[in-house]
Length: 142
Image (cartoon, rainbow, N blue to C red; front, side, top):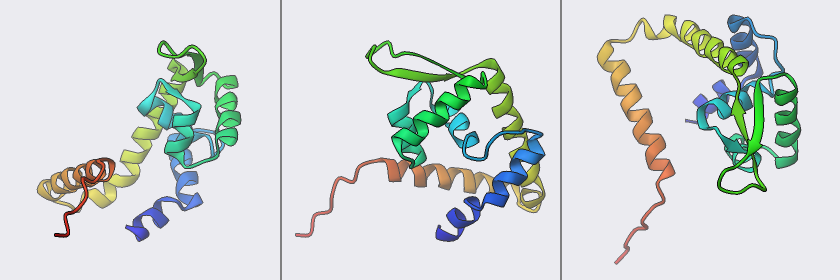
């Protein structure tokens, strides 16, 4: 798992993805844009927690995404004090381009895999993430 995280966090991988997608966007902004697209509407606190970044940094970066027309912020229906980030059509076009680029970059590796192997990977990764997100009920040591 450490190897996978280290590999995925390499800056050159982000640069390759942005280049493949034909996008000119600061490397620090695109994961936030994708997070807003996947989990939005989302407040800055939740987004910063998901991104593992400082709230004030994410707040500035969200403002930059808004100034680029990629997201908009609007009051939360549940709590008007909170402004949630929502993807715009322009932002969705960018995340669609990133998704397509990810698929193109992964295709040569996955082409060597059987359909069953790929299905197993998807199933097991989903299970792993779901299990990590589920609070442990504790273990009885008696």
